[in-house]
Amino acid sequence: MKQIHWFPGHMKKAQNEVQDKIKLVDVIVELLDARIPLSSRNQVLYKLTKDKTRLVVLTKKDLADTTLTMKWIEYFQAQGFQATFADLNDEKDVKMIVRKVEELGSIKNAKYIAKGMKPQPVRAMILGIPNVGKSTLINKISGRKAASVENKPGHTKAQQWIKVSEKFELLDTPGILQPSYQDGKNAINLALVGSMNENILPNDELATIAFIYMLQNYKKQLTDRFNYLDFSSNVEDNFKLIARKRGYLTKGGEDIEKAYKVFLNELKNGVLGPVTFERVE
Image 1 (cartoon, helix red, strand yellow):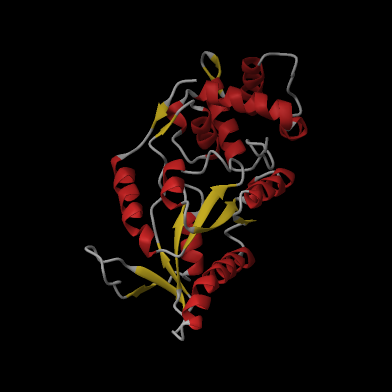
Image 2 (image 1 turned 45 degrees about the vertical axis):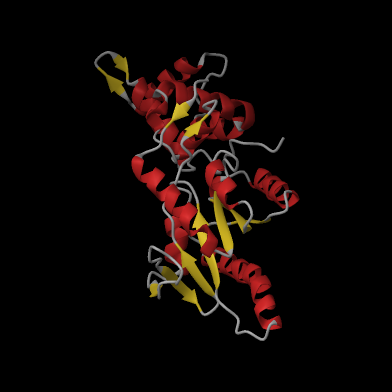
């Protein structure tokens, strides 16, 4: 599979900003999509921040296979990371993330207290690729009333922080993809969950890959949604059947392109049930 490059100019600028700000941060909150935990990790940013205390949060837990999500949590914990999973639209899950960040920051404050100094708010940076839930989490934990904290000294550029509580300050960063994906498989996974433009591959190729994966791993969910499919036929014929059954027709026959698009949208939005595209090896 070919190497895929997809790195808009604003992402390069944002990556440089992250590199400049890392020294100010106590805790990295790394958001990964529970459906593709490895593909949704920006390896460039991970290497830049790997020496920082880290909380790994697998987001979109409602769209992912729960059994596999638990295996991924164990995987990241075995790597030495604090790890959890969350639905960022669930207030309880958001509060749990805040609590875990404050707990990680308490290690720093124990040193301050030991020196007779006043505890300081933990400074956290949320990192994640586009569409992994960063904006949702930031809006939730700041209560949409984000208060700007004074600029921190020792900097050429003024940095604005969101004051979450007396214990917690948050530095926002935009969603950033890595500059390239060597074998293309990660990019396909990103396209399947909506974190990269689906146009990296023609819809028929992307839908075919997804259909075969569902057939191999989530056949019941596929048949529950499309109980009229004939799995002894080839994939294209099945999409023609979907088009006919749903009335996606053109003058020339079935509008198979629409069938591909609708299938990909339903998969991405969880209509076909919870699906995880990566498995712990």
